[in-house]
Image (cartoon, rainbow, N blue to C red; front, side):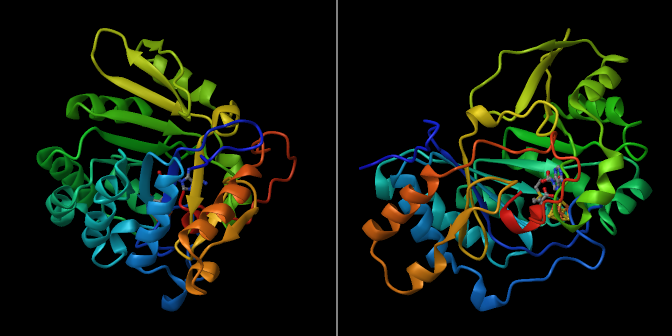
Length: 332
Ligand code: SAM
Ligand code: SF4
């Protein structure tokens, strides 16, 4: 069977799977305070539809599936979907890594069920260690719930746990070393992300941008960082913290993009296969699925579409970047 490959000979092996556009937070850099327009329920893929599309995609070469959103844990009965997806390996005689990115507000009570259903590992967003600031950045999030979620994820073995921080000038750029210290104390990897100018909040976040080089300089005021070799398909420059076993990563989609080795596809909650974060191009799979297309027909449509994957983003070059695609809608 043909494999997923694009016109630049990049093999596509990583799927970001959004299971909902909805979220219980409204992070400054991701959603407007009033939220994004929500999908109607019939517009959202059912678990059976997601399972079928992911199985087809895995047959075509996807080996890593990361469940995301919106906030994936607001999708009711998510452990049932994880149970279904974790059986795909046996169905196709393959090997798929199943992970989740979450804001962790609902993680503590669900962590064990997620692990038991077959989830391998987890990334948790953590933008501040100060409860008031955390509340302000997420417009309503409670830090205590997230910290409980991190502890529970470690207890039940959803490892490696990775923490993500979007760095915002004048808001949390004074906390980077404290966040590193927190990650070291928990024995987890921490990743710092440049903010991307996406969605209806993109313009207002441009002035909050801190580059990867500056993030590194800030952290190096307290810690020595030794760069590690770049891993193909990774979006981060990884560093060893000198004198410890801990590592951190800096993700630079704007200043030093890793598009030439990008191996990602995205499937939205509404069943759209999206080729790149910063381009509208993609294809609706839900329509054909509901019209009764066969696996072979869907596979051909996916292969043809994936082949068109754009070369990369233009965040750095565009003087007035307006990417109307919201992260919450495309499986950020
Ligand atoms: N709700 C979950 C969460 O926050 O982890 C999963 C979805 S969220 C869209 C996935 C990741 O995208 C989070 O780590 C979040 O911080 C990041 N993100 C959202 N908007 C972003 C932006 N404009 N620039 C950079 N990262 C962003
Ligand atoms: Fe919700 Fe995640 Fe976006 Fe924050 S980053 S608003 S938690 S989807």
